[in-house]
Image 1 (tube, rainbow, N blue to C red):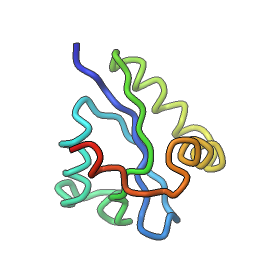
Image 2 (cartoon, one colour):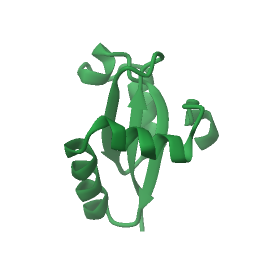
Image 3 (tube, rainbow, N blue to C red):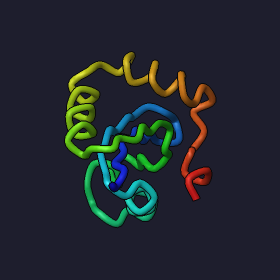
Length: 95
């Protein structure tokens, strides 16, 4: 069984939040950090992983991602503060 993740990225000033879903968290965050894909995260320099949550089923992860994207910033900040109150980049801890 492959674990999927919902994650939140931010920029260095914590002004922009990006919610994503992936079946390979390390690879996906590396892609954000290297700006492999040109799009929202590369445009706004969102490459600091500040929150992630694992799921056993990708369908559950996608449902949760949609819920987070539809929610407001305050709810996202509450999740981040619960897991990572200093808003540190959690990527190095994944390696």
